[in-house]
Structures are given as C-alpha cells and as structure tokens.
Image (cartoon, rainbow, N blue to C red; front, side, top):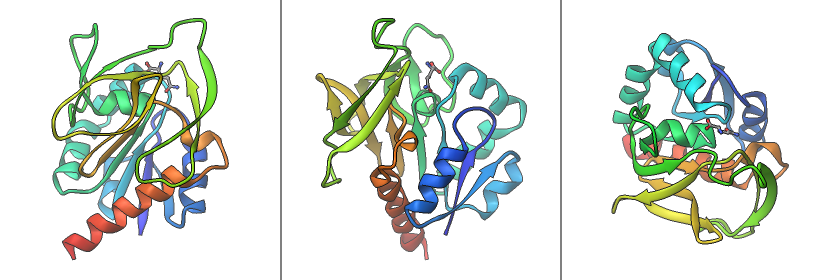
Length: 194
Ligand code: GLN
C-alpha cells in the first residue's frame, strides 16, 4: 500500500514519517501522474490559499476530484481541511468542495495562535495529541458527515465516508494514532474494491 502527501507547500516530511510509522509506504506528490500509483492521499497543513493556487496551476483540482470519485481516501490536516471543504466562511471561492462542511479559517484568533492539547477522537482508544497552529474550525456539517471530536464544543475532527479532516497537525507529534486510523481507511477502501 502506498499513500501520497501532496507536496506543493506545507508540512510534508512529517506526514511521510508518521505514515511510515503507521505501517504504510509514503511518497511526496508533486505531479498529478503520481496519483495513479497511490491508494490514499494526505493534504497537509500550510497556507490554504497558496495550496489552492498551486493545485489549480498544476492540475490537481481535477486529478484529486477524480481520485476521490474512485473512492480513494483523502486526509486533510489544518490547511488541508480547508482545501477539502465545500464552503469557507467569508470567502467566495472554496477549493476542492469534496466535504459537506463549512469551515472558518484562523478561528482561534490572535491570543491562541498555537497550542497543544489531548483530544478524545471517536474510533481511537487513547487521547490524540493535537497541535493547533492558526487553526480552522468546522462550523457546520452536512448529515453525511460524522463528527469524531470537538474542542470546547467546536468541531475539530470529521469524517465523511472516505474523507477525513482535522483542524490540527497530528504529524508534529510522535502520536501516530490518527495516521494509523487513516491507513486503516485506505486498507478498507482498497479491500472493498478488490
Ligand atoms: N491558517 C492557515 C490557512 O488558513 C492554516 C494553518 C495551518 O495549516 N497550520 O490556510
């Protein structure tokens, strides 16, 4: 099994390390052709406007939509979550529009630009260590979206079938449980196709 990490901008190497620790092969993805050899894809944190711009420039909008339409799992973290969302508060244009949710960017304000906490995540036994950096929040989800965790009553982890999104950076800690959860999603999706 091979999982890619979209490597246009943002935290790529850390995701590769975490995916490998969770038992998958992992590669940095810079060209759309590389998607063909992959069973799953991570869209990392960084700056969503920049990632969106580069995705449009290099043909990733159509290619990832097609990847998703094949039922192949996607995992968006922080800016990657914003890229997956149907709607972005205060912005006319969203990016991939794959997940039925409305997100707010930089939702914690200036005082709490970055912090760490332990989160209870549905489907994972132990609390997950989460690093929030100028993090977005999920303000609204559609009926097909499952809320997997909240922080102070706000949604920070969600899943819609083969799509997983988190507000924070799970790749910046030695806790690989969320990557293991995603690796399982990829295994399940590949098995159901075979
Ligand atoms: N604030 C960034 C954005 O809006 C996301 C921050 C991150 O990925 N750490 O794109």
